[in-house]
Image 1 (cartoon, rainbow, N blue to C red):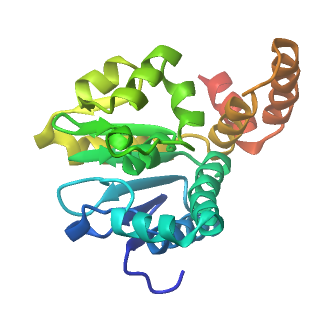
Image 2: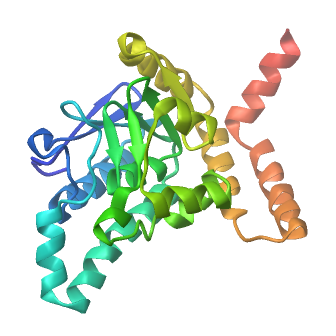
Amino acid sequence: MSEAQNVLFSVDESIARVTLNRPDKRNALNDELVSEFKDALKAAADNESVRVVLIKGAGKDFCSGADLASLQRISQAGVEESLASARVMGELFVEMRRYPHPIIAAVRGRALAGGCGLATACDIILAAESAQFGYPEVNIGFIPAMVMAILRRSVSEKRAFELITRGEIVSAKAASEMGMINRVFADDEFEAAVESYAGQMAAKSASAVSLAKSLLYHMDGMTFETAIEAGIQLNAITRMTDDCKRGVARFLKK
């Protein structure tokens, strides 16, 4: 991975750490940051030791959303440039969905608009008790367009409608209760809890977790019968992995 300014990347044992690094802009998303974020994911995928990707924001907030100055510039440039910019973010969400290992968002402070979208695109969201989430785009006449495909799979359709049309900011507790995020930890315990959670995830069978992620997301849009057939295929494949063979052998020795 080349030298980056907007995103920091490192690997500690089996955990790749990706930090959004525009704290003076509340880690607002622009094309440069998104490009470097993609580079970080590729670097993590190319590193055979990585089992989990952990995403954080530098400073007080996770991410405030799109850089509005950049958004204004692009909107004034015309439809083609607007489409190209939107496609960059949409393609990132697809890449995250296809990424073979779990991607965990560790959210302190605010995750709003595109920042909430980035967190929602992760497989797991861990939040500090004081964290806030929301899609306030409607308040400036905009919409959280691409992330709707993920949000409506995370919460009920009616809850998703309310989130994207009222633009309200919700607490971590409320986000957890509606199924928008996974876990909430006390602020003073957050860092330690995130490290423990990521470490436990990284200790799981890499092949089993990767196959489970792939199957779960590929079931989107399948009929019941097709999803069962996909499960049959992956069940058989998983039995043949070294991790499964070793796991069964360990269990039988007990």
